[in-house]
Length: 132
Image 1: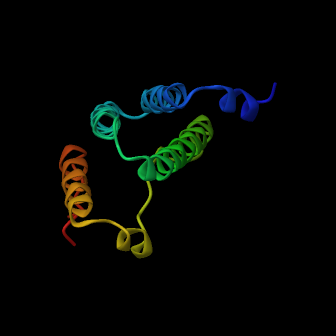
Image 2: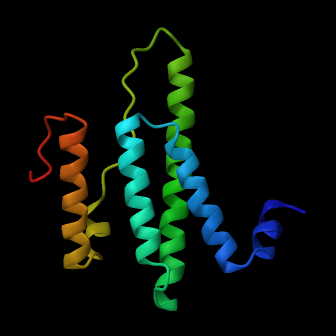
């Protein structure tokens, strides 16, 4: 049985739980502050969407699956870069959001995103101001 068949055999609740646990496992590879912040956010989001309307389930699962894939790739790349001592360890996790992505956000989602950005930048000691 291939992975796709195995996932299709799972119930919706089992797929959600698998994705949730996968993301928490990926967060273990992040620096402690980012891991803690990421875990807190993921737990809140999955809890908040536990009983969401069916029309939102597909996009929720797709976006979080995309996040897990992107984070997995970034962690793998960081491990490869980190094993080569000729390169300085300047690892950044995450990616910038493009304006078209932001256009689809509601006001409350944009506010939540701004709050998260402020928390990330203040906790990580960044000099970048998320209000810019």
